[in-house]
Length: 273
Image (cartoon, rainbow, N blue to C red; front, side):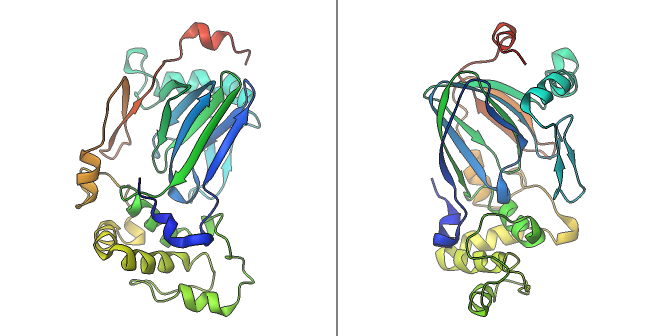
């Protein structure tokens, strides 16, 4: 699997972790940083996953217009008690009156979840759990990542050596990108640096990604139905083996998630939220 953030070398954010937690621990609703995608492989135990497309804010979560500030319940238990039923009612299956956007399922030992760029996700350990996870940038989400680095430098996080007191040598190293004047902030210059590194690695990949990125005032979410090659070719070849639940981002991008088990009412009832 290609990870284009490796072109940043030691400057890239931390991206690979072993996560261990007891039953009922987990993470609240969030999107992964810098528009990266992720995979999460369960080594022991099982995890409940709830997922919503990028354009669908979870009930009980409030986001500023520029998405820089997110306000949410203090704990996962608080969200489950106060907003889980609302999420099911609004975004659950069409059979119960929802819009079908909510993806819900359980990953058990030996299974891996793929989290697409920009998707909201909420995770609860149903048992004591150990998992391996990694954030990455593949060719498929490259337009989204480039657009984020260009348009939201104040929201970039985790890059090493990008403190405001970095010396002028870093400014010279990061300048000279494609059609984008380097700003004074080290994080703002990351877009130019990434473009330069991509051009050295594979100029064709960069060219196609830049063709897809709209001007800042006309941004659009990436989808393979309208993306240029090689992105459409990559997306068309994605495997959908196994039991799958499908949703749409709302912009013409269908995505499938293979889940080894679905959460039933009796299992949820055993967890005292």
